Image 1 (cartoon, rainbow, N blue to C red):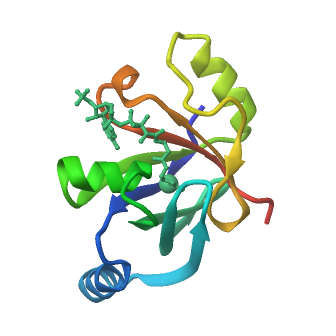
Image 2 (cartoon, rainbow, N blue to C red):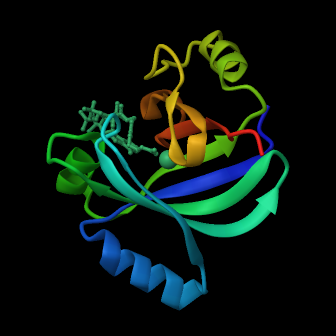
Length: 140
Ligand code: CMX
Ligand code: CO
């Protein structure tokens, strides 16, 4: 079902500061910057490698408000790993397959993700405490 790790999402208080840190430490390049109002984030994608069906990235996330998912996470747990996103060939199919196993889907239907992708989240309490995102990359 999973083709690769699409990205690791990192919750940050200051996006520009963390872009400088990650690009300096690991020699990663920012390939996309977006504001996603629906997800309540300002974000940057730092490219790591290309793989089956899409690339692998670090996703740096700064919340747009305190009551957004990342804003609440920062208040409760501080900066750090927020979620892990797996590349899937078909996000709707993956949601059906995983949902049928009793895992709560946080999205009734796929939403817009970074760089034209389609995404959906799984409840962290049903996945061993790891907030999980499914990503169908945009067609190249
Ligand atoms: N990873 C692991 N556990 C998490 C978590 C995370 N990122 N966020 C919350 N939790 C845990 C909390 O610690 C809490 O556990 P306890 O009850 O044991 O304390 C429980 O889940 C409920 O958390 P909460 O603080 O009450 O927060 P909410 O229920 O309001 O929301 C969640 C949690 C996961 C449902 C919500 O953040 C969500 O819908 N996330 C999906 C969307 C998202 O994260 N968007 C931003 C990223 C966008 C992108 O990647 O493009
Ligand atoms: Co993400």
